[in-house]
Length: 250
Ligand SMILES: [Zn+2]
Ligand SMILES: [Zn+2]
Image 1 (cartoon, rainbow, N blue to C red):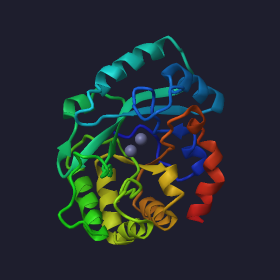
Image 2 (image 1 turned 180 degrees about the vertical axis):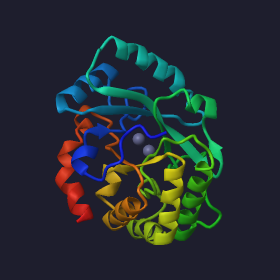
Image 3 (image 1 turned 90 degrees about the vertical axis):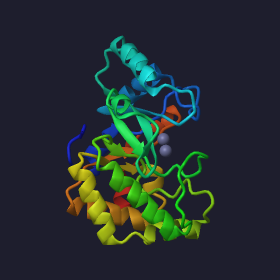
Image 4 (image 1 turned 120 degrees about the horizontal axis):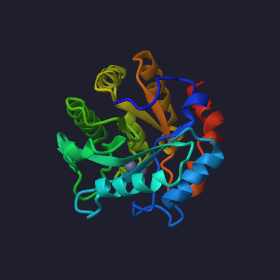
């Protein structure tokens, strides 16, 4: 389900930060206390803040129970910020999900990672070349879009976590995805009512691919959202990226 309007204007997109981690994610800083995140979002002037804590197999973390808890705490804040309590869910292989559909649907915002290849339980392609990974990523998304699970794709196609690849191989992975393949999967995601995250760390690193993702996505009329993958309070500020993001698509 789409939770934000379709726009290609970064000034609009930056009003929403759709990828942030609270202390319920082991990787975030102790300062990422939910109440402080909401107050910081107010200060920055965000319209929407999505909390997307990790759901990993075997982590023992119950994202649905945590979300219920945060929603209770949100009531006490009466904040003007629209806060969506979601999760960064795991599509860890073709048709493989760490949560049931029912639990996914109990969240305000289900953002799926399909690229956490550094994790032990993540499915790896048989062909471990850059093209092999590209095809695997496309196949995982294709199968995911046969379901109504995903509201968003977190850091789409990001090779950032492919720690077994050097920088050249990471770039090759992205370059080996053709414009047609990209267009087809973007369209299928839109039909499945799934948005695509402009993940600032990835978008500003792999700029050749980012430009293709943005332009082909715009042609296909997809929904984009911005996410900074914030693990500390100052990381909640999206607005600082305006110029850098505009430079990528120029
Ligand atoms: Zn991630
Ligand atoms: Zn994340």
